[in-house]
Image (cartoon, rainbow, N blue to C red; front, side, top):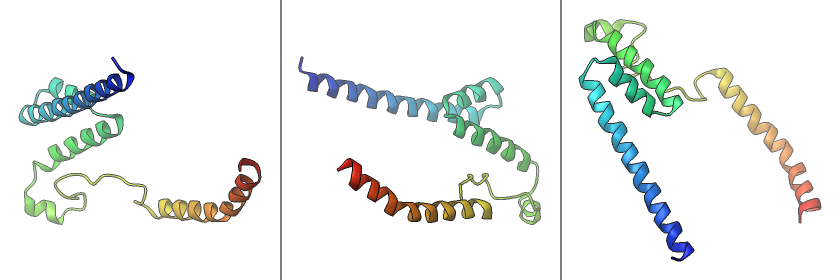
Length: 123
């Protein structure tokens, strides 16, 4: 068997595995949504990456909290942010924006020095 054929087979197996894993997560989520069993929900959370696990747990708690209130009451309350919690991004606060702009400025200042070093020692 040729090395390229082996690599192609392994890539195909890897892609199939990823697809089946996504299918498993999707099916487990549907089952977890239909039942109140904590073990099934925990199994669903265990299949998720860490960052997604935290979000899904908080989102499920939020949905449970808002399910006890009417839509009219939720619309006027301060804590209601919609059907689902918004996902956090690095642009949520002014501090985060300030840090991002500072990073861009520093990289713009450092770029000529990096290029000069690269041209002198790496080329």
